[in-house]
Image (cartoon, rainbow, N blue to C red; front, side):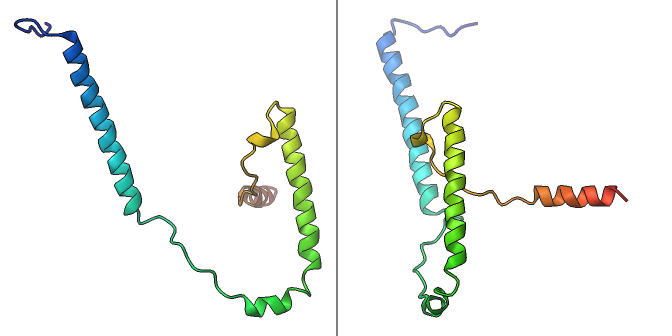
Length: 117
């Protein structure tokens, strides 16, 4: 059933050949990943910031509401970080906290409203 080889075949040579093949394939995969990253059509293009001259005039009038919202967001981040720390993780392990844009609760409420009638 096995492969028979005539003569003496050094196991060290066999190991080196196999290691060469494995690392050659790994290097080729790495090159392929680099090429895909270079020609990736889904990558976000770097855009230059647009001037905000018109919005700067309206900013002082609406500055009170965002300040309150920012303070509320800081409190939410502090509560989430405290909950994570209570589970045994450190605050340095938290990479980012972002709100999730989900319509699940809205859809569930609509379904519940329709089902009641």
